[in-house]
Image 1 (tube, protein in one colour):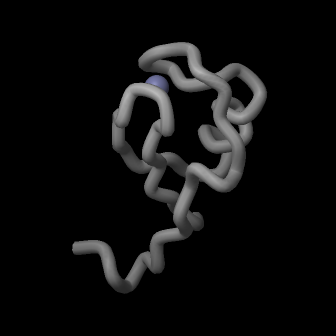
Image 2 (cartoon, rainbow, N blue to C red):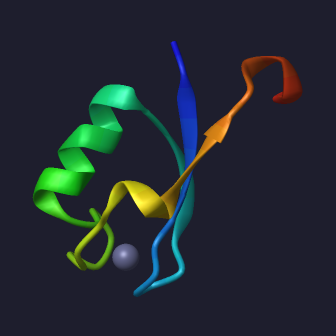
Length: 51
Ligand SMILES: [Zn+2]
């Protein structure tokens, strides 16, 4: 499954999200601060480049 690295533009929180999590966050906002989230806040992570 593709994964994404998320950086919140409001609170600066960073963590990795999979695609269902990405979609939920775009819908519901940042789980840390509630700020609005767009797909621009996610950077795709190549699985082979992670650990
Ligand atoms: Zn946030």
